[in-house]
Structure formats: C-alpha cells, structure tokens
Length: 389
Ligand code: PLP
Image (cartoon, rainbow, N blue to C red; front, side):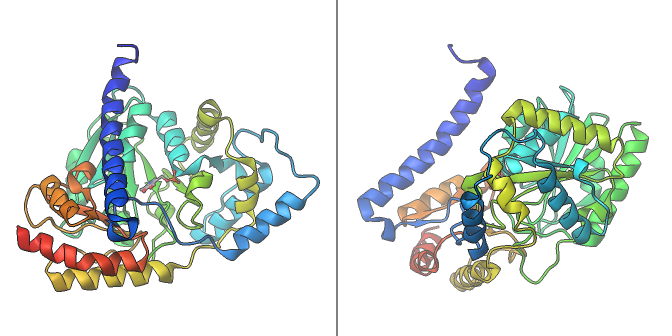
C-alpha cells in the first residue's frame, strides 16, 4: 500500500462521503437542481452581514495592508479585540495571550486536542456528535468514548460521570449542537463542571473541557450560558463560519479560561501546535473579524426555515425535538434502519444524512441551511416516504 495504513481507513470513510455527494450531484443533473431537495450539507447560505464587505473594502484599500505571515497565534491587536469581546460576553477578564487565531473552529479543535492529549488518552463526547470529531481525534492520536444524552439530546450528567475513567483527558461538548439543535442549559453545565472537577480529583489528573461553540449566535428563544462560568478549566473553540457566514474563509479562534490549570502553558502549547499545523490563520480575515466583534448574520432567516420545516414535518407525522439553536433538525427515523430510510428519502429526491454517521442511529439529520423553496417543495416527498414504510 503506497499510503500509510492508518490513513487507509480515513480515506475509505471520506470516499463514502464523496459517494454521497456524487449521488446527489447525479440526481441534480438528472432531475434538475430545483427538483432535488438537498438537506445534507451544513454549508451556510445566508449572506454575511453587510458590514463584512465594507470592512473588507476598507482593508484592501489601505496602502499599508500587509500580506506577509502574521505572528503565529495571530496579530496582537486582533487577539486583543477578541479578548475584549469575550471579557464582556463572559464577565471574565481575558487577555490577548489566552487567545489563538485559527483556521476555523476545526483548526482550533486540532490545536486544543493535540496540545492536551497523550497517545491512548480519551476524549469523552456526548452522542450524537459532529462527525468531524473523529478526524480531530485521529490527528490527536486520541480515542473517542461516548456518553449517551437524554431524550431531548441534553446532557445526561450521570452517564458522563460513569463514562469518565483514568484515561479521560478531555470532555468535548458542542452547544448549540450539530446534529441535534440542543442548547445546554446553565444548570446542566454547572452539574457537568462539578462532575469534571470531582473526577479530576479522583484520578489526580486535570480533565479539560473543550467547548465547541461555532453556532453560539444562532439560537431561538434561549440563551447560550457562559461555559467559562460553569468550569474554569475550559477552552472554548469557535469561528466566524456560521455567525458571519464565512465558512469558506476559514477563520476562527480558541480561548483559554485565564484561571484554567496551567492556562499559560496550555495557551502557549496551542499556539505552537497552530504554528505546526497551519503557520497562522488567514491574515486578511483576522483583520476583518477583529472589526466585526459582536456582529452576526440575520438569525430570523434560520428561524423562519426552522419553523417551516418543523410545522411541515409535524403535520406529515414525523417525530423530533424542536431545535433550540444551530440549523439542524434530527428527527426520529420511522424505521430503525436510518440508512435504509435515508435511501427511501433519496427515492423521493430528498437528500439527508443518516443518524448513525453521528453516533445517533435511528435518526436522520436535515440541515436547514437551504432556501425556503427547498423546504416547501420537499413536503410531499417526506409524506410519501413515511407512507412507504
Ligand atoms: N464544530 C461543529 C459542531 C461543526 O458543525 C463544524 C462545521 O460544520 C465545525 C466544528 C467546524 O467549523 P469551521 O468551519 O469553523 O472549521
């Protein structure tokens, strides 16, 4: 085999995703893209806020704009701007040295996990979970262990407590959640913080909480509580992919709680890993987002789509938890084999992702980062698919 043994499995996994894309593209070519209802991708289609273009124009017209390397953890003034914004948002004093500018939340997750985890140690994740976590765990040479969530896909803190072992180095949570749309409440986060602290004492080893929050600004009638208030040994990772609809521009950050155990060491290590993996985050985008702190996309667009999709599917007879945030719906599959049901949806020209891919068998994921016409046009197909089973 010309490629590394451990890469073979990853390539096989990615080729399944590729096949899914290709099957979708074939259907669109055969039936016309307007007749295929593609809910399979979490690629934000809502336009970035108008301020983004203004800021970009100002930057490119500036004679002094540099296109050289930036300091590896990011421009000092950009890290300072993020630190100031987070200080206000979380009521905790962040300094610029606790921030690393990264290539999206993915880059931040790689930096955080690779900095913290020794080979053989585990990342504990509530299931269902974002598929990308398997890639970041692979890069960090870590094993994934999952803990079940409750019926609303919220944290089951006693399941987490039971799943923690002497191998656990990181608890990784994602709220608002992809694929379920759950937003964890302050009380459950406080209970989680308590359990992590007790377990760290029991195993004489600090368990860090990595909070993946790229959907933080996309919520419906609920607040996302400050994760830093729930547990000090926390690294939040985030990006502007969803909150500014800049997914392709690849810009994000990580923030280490200033009172985390060995905070300076952890932030320093994350900066070094960032250097090794990507040298520095895109310089133009660093400058742009530093001027857009607190700005976000028009969430009412996602809310309208969520309401439309939930209303339509409930009328047809699907069961689901109404998403509290992000732009995903995770309905129950009407048959236990979710892969089979996703194929039945495909016969109706509806593209969805099977829950099993997210550690959530018996469900399927719909992304509503799609136009309203996709939602309204798909309802007859959803009805027929249900009738077929
Ligand atoms: N975490 C979650 C839960 C996601 O859904 C995604 C992307 O879809 C990422 C991280 C990666 O985001 P980014 O584009 O900022 O790298």
